[in-house]
Length: 349
Image 1 (cartoon, one colour):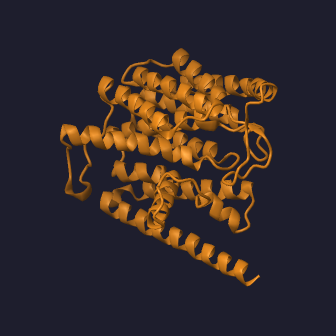
Image 2 (cartoon, rainbow, N blue to C red):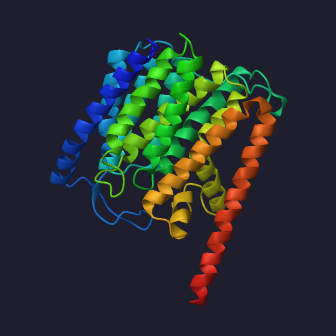
Image 3 (cartoon, rainbow, N blue to C red):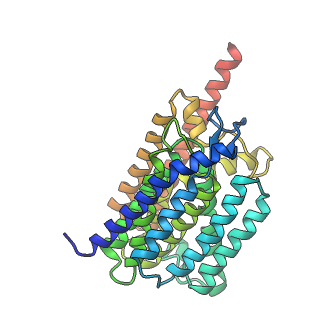
């Protein structure tokens, strides 16, 4: 066995054990203190459920990373951002706070990794004929990427096991890439990914349908932020051909869902941040799939796209982007046509 693999296995196992043992205590305290998520028109669950699963994930991830990993090459600043987002996410899970306050804290966490660790996208690598980015554009685009991916993971957290499963797939993909291609420079980002995998696996034990706990904003903001940094470092590593397009493919399901629902809301004259039931998992549920089937379908779609972008990474960024765009349009049309037919059926009845 490769000697580099043992520390990753130990780190992931540690995170898993911490998370899986922490969750039952969190569930018990949440019920005792009545810290429970109330069902509403957007949610699928019908019972009061704790939403502090992110606390267990954070405990597992944080302890494993600080014990088993070197905190250099920007990982120290990544942890600082995670701590800030953890507390604002936990506050939102306990007492709902405004979107503006959450955005301000995301801005602070993003600033820490960009300006203190110089983690940013420096080149489009030929997309739209653009190579190296001017410093201002680099910071601006990196900010949009981090905040966009963080909130995309937050938005996909709508079914038992969905966000956890998608983040698990994404983290495993990035982690394997850093392990295989990153060398010494990116070895600690392989550890970041594997620590997150362990924490998610421990949490998912209690989150699949019917879930006894949700990750809440504590978990989704944490996962989204970590995944966004992994994506940026994957692109900057430049060891995989067409890495910007490949990164989009790895993040396909959450990004597709975010762009799709935002576009629908804007076309209807609503705010892109207005809550509704137009997410991809809502549409699949409307087709008659149950929660488990919906999670498996979306996980399969994400895996399929990942396999495609890696297998055809030699096509170049423009061709991969065009293929992803065509697939997104076809999938959107399919979901929209089914929705229209469902509405017509209801009207006839």
